[in-house]
View (tube, rainbow, N blue to C red):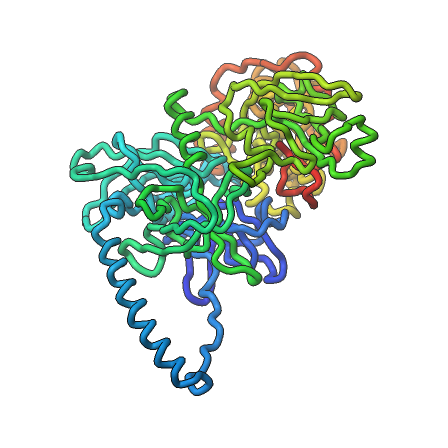
Length: 615
């Protein structure tokens, strides 16, 4: 997921390299992103090197969302352009004298303010994070890529815990933290990572680290134009950095790392690589959020994003409730706005409100209570406008999915709907979304199964990034973009490559093709495939692939060749450790027979206009 970032001032090498023309916007959901002209990017500083793959394009880059996350290893784009200074000869003499006096006063005020910040206790709660990452090699799933290091920021929240960004410690093998004014680095433990909200919880066992520490206090959601101070350890130096700005906007925004939509605070304070995980303060010294991404564009300047305390509190409460992080829930429906009067009249909606249900995910509870053509007019008795917005604070409105993000996994929502002109109330349980092609791999290492040199693995977004679109093929890309999971646990299993051996002569050139059946049985996921192979009693193993291509192997010869193939290619085992567990089939009959390819994208990032949106 990491990429090399290169510009004329800095150079960082990570695991992959991405190229994009300056005129084309891109949206990077990776830990570190290439410095293009339009990107939303994590803000961390990385160093070291890892195996690079050229030409890979992340899913979000193709979708044209222009934001960059600011994470540990992220260098981002180059220095901002400065306009030419106006010559003094063009200014009246009196104006020059006045400006000179004002500059002296301003300088004194800034010096006083700087001393106040230096003495502020809340700065001592901000620490520097040093992380060593070892990302999986998705093309060779039995091994990992070369390790690399990065730096970011974190802060103390009490009870012996630290808060930082999830992308700062993604694929971590070692995490260390250092307090301000201290030369000692302490080993930290990662307690939880929330990929969708880009938050991670750390702890340090050493009592020495916590001596004299004062945790930060969380403040409420700020208002527009309120002053904000961002503190962290960005590039440009080793000591703590403080930048100031104001709150520019508060709305539901795209979280690049988690490919999710949650409440975010837009600020104009400078946020640079290394600021990720650092706190943002109000004038009272209260933490109002966590710096995590910036918008890079030739048409815009000083657009940074902060995770608000409402999202942070949701993450912490989720962890306290369950002993682990379970994620933000979703309703699992695609909605269309009802601005057009004729459309509302056709649906027998008399008032100017509601959103039209256009698609319902088969894996969500709403699939049992909602139908295509229903109009959602209220959520927990809060009226939903025809543009898909709900009231927010005094005189503001916000996207309807903000209400969903306030719920926890397992909570039940009361929906007011209009169906065929009749108003009714239904209840739907909310749970985290099930992705057919996941953005991130749980546990860090992808599953794999090797049968007679045929390497099978589930399709994932990181694998698509590594292999590039051209080698994956249009059919697999279409399924990744348009297909919904028909049941929990469903995966698209592909033949990644063939390790040449006498037993698989004639199949050596096969790669990145979806396997549909084994001996006539549809394959549900990689665990199911392993179970079918282990329980097979037939003489032959007959694999059916996309495009009506079949591969036939003699079963006993295939099993006998396993040892020599693993030895020749230096592979430790023929399958990943998770496939050694007993297989349990939880699929209800008939679920896998539904049509899976839809006519609309499965992510808000790929929808070309704002008339449709996933909730």
